[in-house]
Length: 474
Image (cartoon, rainbow, N blue to C red):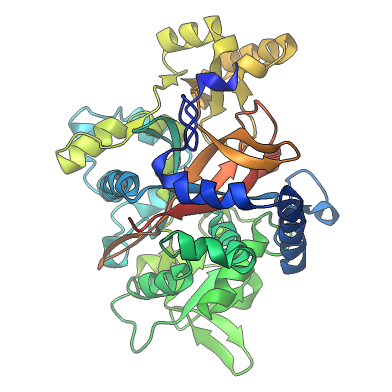
């Protein structure tokens, strides 16, 4: 497919520049390409010095990769952002209401809007959370909503990340790098700030402390350790919030509280921002082989002695089979039509849908229901005949493990290449903070970009990069 079949966020079809990019385009035209190439190298050096890396699963820890960063910002108008924000907030409120309902009365199942099997046979549904209400009624303290754009006013939700959404550290480092290298750009363009995110996160988490917490709540970040692909982010956020970064071995249950080891003994924790999956959170309640979480933390949690962010069991909300029901979920809990559309989705567990998908594999994107990071998926239009044949066998063997979607014409934004500005496909992950005081959406988020020409895969684990995302003040 040629690039003229895609909506370009900077360039008009007749050759002019769209309004959000006008000031930037004027600046760019006055710049020396040689100087900009030097700035691109400088950005890479800054990322390297800061240790902004990630590890691809299946590779050794010694093969950490630098996150590719592109110096051309993605720019969103204030009016566009306001529309997106309303849709994001509506969706996040619905997700939180859905999680409360499915772990309590399951009214949405009784109403026939979601099949009972979607819960009963779903590995992400935790029976241990039945009739448990998190402090403040908040399940999804931090949410990342993946959006793609196909036209001037047309955004789709590609995925909901309600478990342990990652990438916010790259959003912050991208902005810091741009501010350092191009301060004059921020004078010309009134860009809404994102740098307050760590303070907002700390405040939002503290507002979710259990009822018994006294004084300033003690917050900590739980990491699986240095070999986790997102360890850099865990350490970064703990440092930026001014809280402790802990591993499972640093924690134990003391007098009915979860406490962390310090030089002065064990100190109780009120709020634990965990970056450990449910199955590894508590060896007494989940995987008995796990050493990543403290034994007994779920018992303390159920007794109201600690807040775990995000709440255990939230993973079912970012299950891709549940995603296909999100329009019904939004309408059921808000009484409103969804402001943000889903991508049309075929559930391969349905025989008719499976038949259609098998007949049209070369035109579809097929994803694992519990997959993430771009792993385990098929992009039909770019797949080989061998890949399609192999996926056809997988689908027939385990249809319930997959969903399929059309190949969307993702919008493009420019990257800085040897030949100047070149269009590449992007998505956007805004970050949402939820607490009893309200919902806060950081203006912008993480733009991931497919650096390879023609590629639709933006995941860093699959060769994608990132760029700074600007939301204009006016």
